[in-house]
Length: 325
Image 1: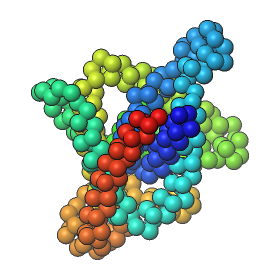
Image 2: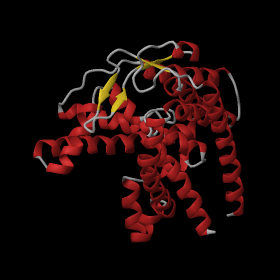
Image 3: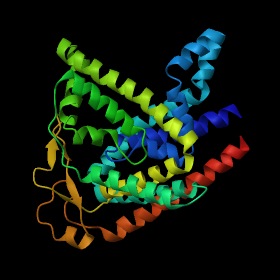
């Protein structure tokens, strides 16, 4: 029983870890697909007064119960493994076969949106409005031009809280939000420098960003948990909209905008801004960094279908293992 639970939860965490490595794909999406989203929110929500209450009531045992310890350990273990796999395997695949990889995730996110929408018990005008609002907001985020960053500590704190809040939302990538705020190229190198040199100025940035993430995670998890309890179907509708709106970012055929790339410290060129185009338009592009101009239409469609099958298979397997446990 316990071993099955640990393995199943660790596999879900592994999938989340892989997703977090991929720019534009949210670990929250995977948590939603695998049915652990609300439980994860409750664990994050427990970070605060609930921990003190648990410790005061029953010591370490109470602390472990408040944090849903068995679930948390299994999930984090899987996430760490998933991040390692993602760093070495997924990044290689993205560099080598970008269109095919994005096609797979397009199919995966699309069927995930249908999966989430299916959980809405009662449909009405407000639910449709919720999907529309969620889709419009997410779509607007994907087409927004990256802004100029701000090195002030208060803005670093704010960017940390916003990025981690976005990470909790299915369909929205925290790293992409940092990019839009103009903070990705400032925060990430600074954090790396802080961990290498322990420079006081860099450490201050690290602490401000970490504090912002902690506050954002605690506050936003409570907001989401409250909306799920009070407005369950409406919340699902908005999250479905987020998933649908984010598909623009994951569409495999992208035209890279002028000055729409940046070079990392490692020398790797990454896309910061692009627009979705039809395969025929993609094939006619003469200069398209990273993505090229070979539409690979048949392969992309096949990978989209595989993304569909993956989610349906994962749902079937998860239900079977959960019943067996």
